[in-house]
Length: 524
Image (cartoon, rainbow, N blue to C red; front, side, top):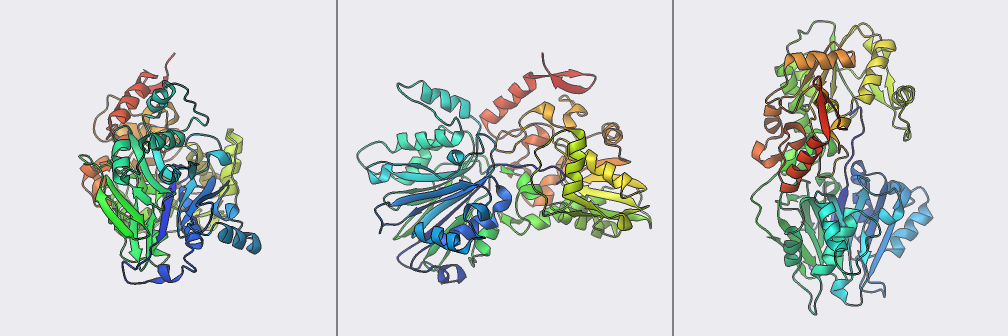
């Protein structure tokens, strides 16, 4: 993707049980002295694509006075765990050893880039089932209402003003009483108040762990057992690379509860609606992962195949397919295979470029020069079909097009997007929250129904200074992924949201903008 689009975050969990519950494999054989922490760190590193601002773990060790211990810092997983300093790295793994633990990588869709916002969160208490740590992936769409409900109670205070803190207080309230509640019932009660995306991993002072997927299933979650070891992760590749084999996917509304004696998977609430975020397949997930049994790589490849199938610009001997690295490579391969024209990496990604905290046009050009290397020997004089996975704000794509024309000296640029136009915000954890921040709504009015017209596409192409622009049709998304459209969240591309609060927030977003000559502006 030419623009870095992020969402919050990834979760992981491991439990070393007393007895084996499946044939032993590489994952369980790697546990030494019942310490799962080295593997937990590896899992987070495998899911670094889902969050680079902070990382952390919470471990359970019944042999220590500090039964639950949290370690978290800002930075990438390698930075947090000091992997380039072997002695410090080994010390962290030893000091935070445990037989069970949860982990998290974070990208901040809300809250500050500070360690106190990093997860897991911990709430200490003298009663063991009220002493807990948890982490979550997603965003509560009804966070403002939940916050006001808590603050309306006597002597309540919110210090961080993020949905993670709201979840912590909500869990604490459900755990009130003189007996440890059933953990599935805890999630059942929480789900009656929460609206949005919330995969949660949790561990308490009794050594009880759970992992749960929200009733709509917006974000992915999978699990596996190998010998004595139980693993949970946002992405299947994190389990696969540890040696887990029979990897299963949580259905919406399912919870996996574990302790030293074993585990149980069950439904904690009915799930009348399933709405997995289609962007997971298009962009977010690792291409080697599977989500709900559907290959991310093959889905992206199919998107490119459909773009070529519906192509209306003729190919010739001068045509080449060029992906915007890296997530568009699969789609570009699918396009090239169907079109039978050469696939060429005329752009290379500079993996050593640091973050760029600059926004001016000149600075954006510099950021693109730093991030992408243009190869004139591949591009000069070519009719380029440039494949990218989405256009959200268009700022980086514009600068990239300028580089292709000026440095690459291409003869034509035909941009092909393996995603439909992004028309409205996401309220479930992707960092696109305002209509007027998005590119496509300026050309596709709210009143428009169905696929984008050629006139709209031509106007966008002129604005981007490309010869033509085409998007994946909304009607083909489900076919590319391999799931029924009724099981996908397509809210940001069809303006239809799967939860009540999502629909309410969309109407509020619409009321905050006005229309003038077909373009959207902020209302006065």
